[in-house]
Image 1: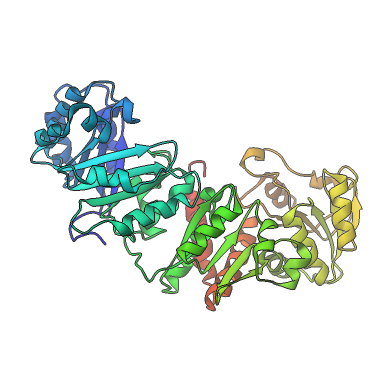
Image 2: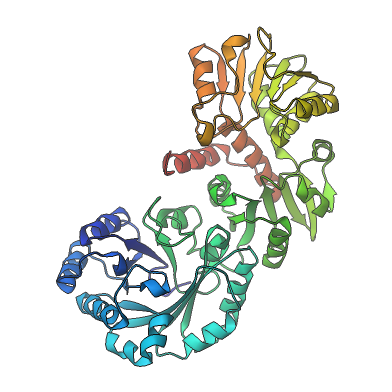
Length: 503
């Protein structure tokens, strides 16, 4: 934990003018954060000291880091080291408590340039936007400089790169300069979120969506409210979601809200990777107690489990893993969620249900509804896939364009049609068939075109959000043994969608 009075989060703000910096700082002015001013983005440095002093007075900014990163070090400043130091000197005189100088400038002009930034506290930074190399020697070299903080930020190409950062943080000598170590990019999110837990005095965030200055930066409000980065400690149990696009998952908002509501000291992290073994090694060394599995690993995870629920085995997909006595135990909560959602609206036994699609989610729906003795019809744009699934669940397969005048109780959309990249499309024209209930498993956007058309016809329309929460609630109950706070989980997802860049 950071010392009292020192912000745990510094918000990086950048823009071409002082007015743009003011606007961004104003977005998070109600939060107990510090600010990193990326002065290298400014287009005009005339009268900088005076203009910064006015900014600090107007917004009451007590904790500010001044950074003017040169292009050589991945920044926007085109001047030389002498000009860079001049800009930072003006910022310190204006009231910035900290000045950040990248190691490239120190190497170019010598360590003596750091003395010119007194009385400001000093950060020397190393950035690598290509990989995470061995970090011990890098920190050792930087820690010998006359600075208070060493900052190391490297691209995490794999989740296991976060382990290098954790090892560095754990091995830092107490009398050495403080270390702020971060992972860049989607796979580096665990290191950003656990930085303070690992002993870093602070971490970095953005002012909001679409405001990230570095790859992988999350909004400050999300860091504080969703992840509670300043409250995580060594006793915090770790969970997460693994997938090839896990950084965009809504599950962290949902599960962290549930942990907070039930007073469980746990954190749920996004774990994005292109290799399932990368995640499994990372999770094992981090001591994860459970995790969610999303695309494309729901089938691949099975061979790495010690036990698999019989229904999940029949489906051939697992989306939930709990670590019990060192063993990986797997379930498929998608299946139970489908039944839960539909059983609220109609009696499933004997109902005729048309499933659109033949992928993993469609398989979960088909096996779950088969167990409820529903009569299943399956259609997909890949006829062979529809036929294979239909054979597995004793269902009837139909051509994608052969459902005219079909009479069914429910249509289940288990395709991605309706998601943002297909937002203007619908999987089928529901006017072509007779149906009572339309269940769209797509949950973003909440109101797909398919659901809007169903409501306009007076049909019962079910959003995929309901299934997302239902399957997540069952995951939470498997992991904790506690009743899931479903209403709060749904509220957390809705709030996240409301504040998403295109939501």
